[in-house]
Image 1 (cartoon, rainbow, N blue to C red):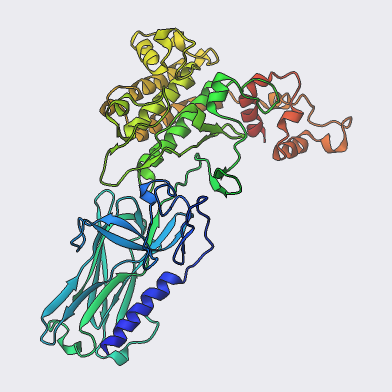
Image 2: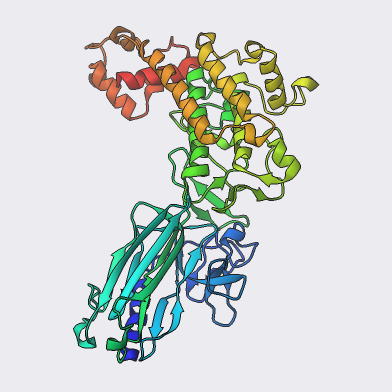
Length: 532
C-alpha cells in the first residue's frame, strides 16, 4: 500500500513536468545543442564559451546526461556548499523548468517522527513564477505548508490539507483534498526564496493510517523561472542566424539611426539628405525620459535587477516616431538579489565610464546613472562624450559640463539648436545631468528618481506645446491644399480623406507643402498626428 502511494506521487511529478514540451531555439555554433533529451539554447550553454555568462551555465552530467545548474546551499539541507537543480526544459520566452525536491515527514508505527525533509531554496539569479506553479500535498494525515519571500523580503504563506481514512477513498488523477490537495501560489508576485513542508494534522501522528500511509509529502509541480526583459523602449530580439561563421542576432528594425548620429551628424535621414534630423528640445527631453524609464525598469522593475553597463548615445536607437529604443545588452550584468554591487573587470565606453567603477571595479546601478548623465549632457550640449578635437579642458564632456555648471555657464555650452524659450525646463534637465555626474555613486540619484523628474519636466513642456496647437487653417497649410477641390484627381479631392489615407500609408513626406522647411520635421509630424 505504501508502494502504491509512492507510485502515485512519482507519476504525478513526471506527468506535470513533462507534458509541456515545445519547439526549442538553437545553441551557438560548435556548442553542444543538447544534454540528454533537453535542448540547450543560447544564452544558456554547457561551457563558459557557449553561454552568455556564468548565470546561464548549465552543467551536463557525463554519466546520466542530465542537465543541471548549481545554487549555493546556505539554506538547504546539504553537506555541500552547492546543490544541483535538474533542468527539464528551457525556452527563450523567458521560462526555465526544473525539477524540485519533495518534502516529506515520516513516522513509525508508534507515531514517532523518523525522517523529515523541508526544502528551503534561495535562488541567486532567477525568480519563481507565482502564476505558472502549483503547490501539492499528498497523504491521508497531511498539512502542506508553503512560504515564499519576494526580493524585498516580504513573506507570503499558504497551505492545504490532504486527508483520508483509507486508501480506497482516494481517486486516481484527482487532487481535491481526499489523499491529495492542490493550491495556487500567492498571485502577482515574483519569489526569490521558497520554503515548503508537510506536517501531520491529527494527534496520533499518522498511527491510524500508518499501514498504508506512514509519510506525508509536499512538492511544487514544476518550478518556472522567469528571466526576460519586456519594455516598450527596449529593442526586441527576434532570434538568431547561424548560417555565418559569426553568430548574428536578429533584432526588430529601427529605421531612424542612433541618437549619436542625429546629435553629431554622419547619418542619412529619412529624406535622403546627407544630414541628421535636428532634434528639438521636446524630442530630446522625451528621448531622455524614455531612456531613463528603461534603466529604472532594469534596475528595479525587471524580474531580476540588471545593470546595462554600456549606456551611451550610440546604443539609443530612434524609430519612425523618434521614440527611443535602448539596445546592446552584450555587456549587461544580472545582479543577485542579495547584492548591491558586483566585482568585475571594467567594461564600457570611454567618456561614459563611471569613474568610481573605473577605479574600484565595483559595478553598481549608479554606474548606469553616471553613463546616463553623460547622455543627458550630450542631448543638452550637442557635444560628443569624448573628443580630442576639442581643447584639452573640453575633451571630456562630463568634467567640462560639471565645471561649466559650477561657473554658471550653461547658456554658453547649450546646443544652438535648442530654443532658449525653453530655458527653465532646460535648466532643470541640466541640474539632473549634473547630479547624475557626481563622482561618488552614493551622491547620485537613482534612475527611478531621474525618470520621475524628467517625466515632470516633459508634462510641463507638453502642456506648453498644447497651448500652441495649430488652427484648422494652419493644418490645411501643412500640405498646401484646399479642403475640397474638383481640380485634383478624384482620390485627392477631399482633403480630409486624402490626408487620412496618406497618414495611414506613411506618406506624409510625399504630401507636405514643398515650401515647408524639412528641418522642422518633428514638429510637422506631431502637428500631422494631431490633425489625423
